[in-house]
Structure formats: structure tokens, C-alpha cells
Image 1 (cartoon, rainbow, N blue to C red):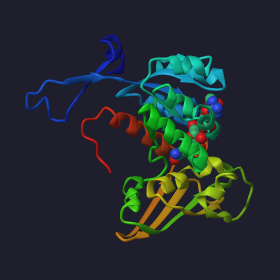
Image 2 (cartoon, rainbow, N blue to C red):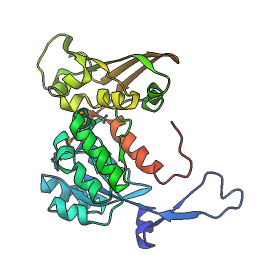
Image 3 (cartoon, rainbow, N blue to C red):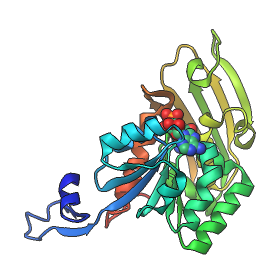
Image 4 (spheres, rainbow, N blue to C red):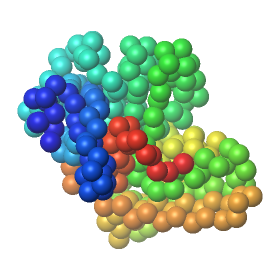
Length: 282
Ligand SMILES: NC(=O)c1ccc[n+]([C@@H]2O[C@H](COP(=O)([O-])OP(=O)(O)OC[C@H]3O[C@@H](n4cnc5c(N)ncnc54)[C@H](O)[C@@H]3O)[C@@H](O)[C@H]2O)c1
């Protein structure tokens, strides 16, 4: 489908469910052009599910990774970030690191492109968060944060309306994915998400995303468990609406055990939604 879209000049027929049966022709909409910043585990999963959008350019601080993924995705590997940003793209998907958001986030928005942030931990820094908010406002662009490795982020936004009294996250991962060597289940951090970010930046994306959605601090427990081969997130929330409990047992990606498949799938779902006329979820 993507190959055909390329040949026919960047348009994609979005099939509307049941439309053919009731006699409507397909409607053609422009294909979303993506710049992929970071060509690791998430980048590879995005590239292998690129439907409804195309990866136009790729950039990685390790040039070979961008080249290898460019061959697979049909995009162009950029030797410099300036070349990447000059390309004709609608948005940049950051799937790289907290540093990448710090270094490049503002420039992306100022260049008039939307920014999808996977390294959400970066937004725990209130100064950077405010800089990106201002850059987005003044350029008329958006910073989008996918639900990532959890479910339920959409309705946590009611925290900013009806109030949430308690929001707790208990994350359990294998010691290996935390870079630790322990033989028994061990509590490695307990406290507010903002304090966990400095010690485990790759493992607090979920708590920072929860905090941004709910508009309040999250109490975090981070456990290393040698008996656990999944990335488990337990969310407990209480407020004026009642109570909620969400448990997600994520399979780690084989390429990077700290990253769950769900996180990559969630950004793919977000990218596909951008071209959808009917968007489900709060
Ligand atoms: N939001 C979530 O729920 C969630 C879940 C999993 C991972 N993440 C985050 O997404 C990011 C990517 O995860 P991954 O598993 O694909 O990581 P990965 O290590 O497999 O790949 C990251 C790639 O980005 C490149 N990179 C890093 N810093 C860069 C920079 N400054 N400029 C250009 N390239 C850079 C690396 O060379 C690497 O190829 C990480 O920050 C991770 O913490 C978020």
C-alpha cells in the first residue's frame, strides 16, 4: 500500500470500514511524512509497521543505525541533524533519548514540525517542558506524548478536571533491564517520579507520562525482581470519580529489554490516528 502511495504521489486511500459495501468511493488523503530521530528498538518497530504514514528521513547519532534502517524503510539516512530538519516532513518522532529531546526538541518545533516524544522522562524537567510548550505555542505546532508502555493514560486526564486524590505506580522489571545485579525482589526506589528520573531515566517514562496526563505528582515504587521476565506496571488511582486499578504486563522488546512492545505500538497507533477522521479515546 505504501509503495503504491509513493508511486501515485504521496496520497493514500484510507479505506473506511464498510464504505465499499454501501457504494462510497475511497477518499484520498495526503500521506503523513515522518522524520525518525533514533533508530533503535522503537525505531525498528515503527519502521516495520509504517502504514498510514511514511518514514521520509532518519537520523541517529550512530550513522550506521540510520543507514541500516533507511534501507529497510525506504527513507533517507541524514548525516547531520540540520539535513534531517530541512527535509519535507510533517512531524518528528523522537525515539532516541532524554538528551535528544533536550538538544533537538525546541529546534524541531521552531522549524514548524510537530514533535512526538517517546523519551517522556525529559519532560520531568520543568524548564525544558516550559521551553517546549512555548516553542509549540509560538510556532502553532504540537508536542505529542503517546500512551507508551501503559494503558489508561487518556482518562487520567480527568485528573485535571474532577481531581485525583491519589496516584500510585508500582513498576517491576528484571534486574538486567535496570542494569542491576540482585538475587531477590528488591525495592530500588520509592518516592515522587521527579526524583526517580535522575537515577533511572529510561525507566520512568511511564510515571512522567502519568503525571503529565493527570496534572499531578505520582508516587512511584520501582522494584527489581529476578523472577520477573516482563515489565509490569500497576497503576492505582483514586479521586472524585471513584477508584481505578490498571495492571499491564508488558513483553520486553528483544532488541532492548528496557523497552516494551506496547510502547512502540502506542506511537504507531498515534501516527495512524493523525490521518483518521474518527479518533477514539479521550
Ligand atoms: N514512553 C514510554 O513509555 C517509553 C517506553 C520505552 C522506551 N521509551 C524511551 O524511548 C527512547 C527510545 O527507546 P529504544 O528502546 O528505541 O532505545 P534504543 O537504545 O534501542 O535506541 C535509541 C537510538 O537512539 C539513538 N540516539 C540516542 N541519543 C541520540 C541523540 N541525541 N541523537 C540521535 N540519536 C540518538 C541511539 O544511537 C539508538 O540507536 C528511550 O529514551 C526510551 O527510554 C519510552
